[in-house]
Image 1 (cartoon, helix red, strand yellow):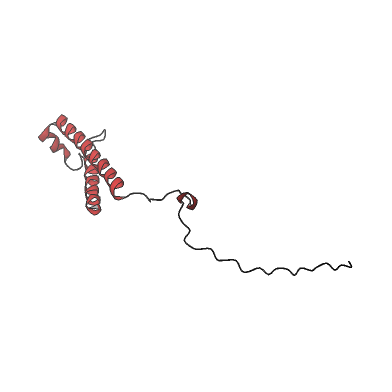
Image 2 (image 1 turned 180 degrees about the vertical axis):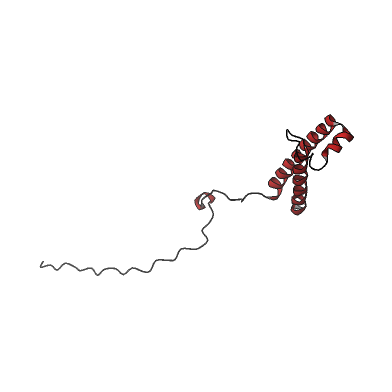
Length: 114
């Protein structure tokens, strides 16, 4: 599913670039280079501008929605908790080793003469 969404995202982004470049600007845009002037005669100049503007808006909206869907559902962040071991309150996994027996120092009994 992730691959399908990425493929659609790529197609939408390429279409969006083409539609943006087809819009006429002060210099005529890319529409003049590819014979876009004939498209203006078919739809009319004003209707062509409206169509390209609407197509840009729709493609941009689709692009943003697909980005959000992909990010929210398919790329969840790392699920880390900021709890310490003490806050979890779990039992320790290893039992402590008993301490080695301590030898007791030899006690000297005081002699009655000292």
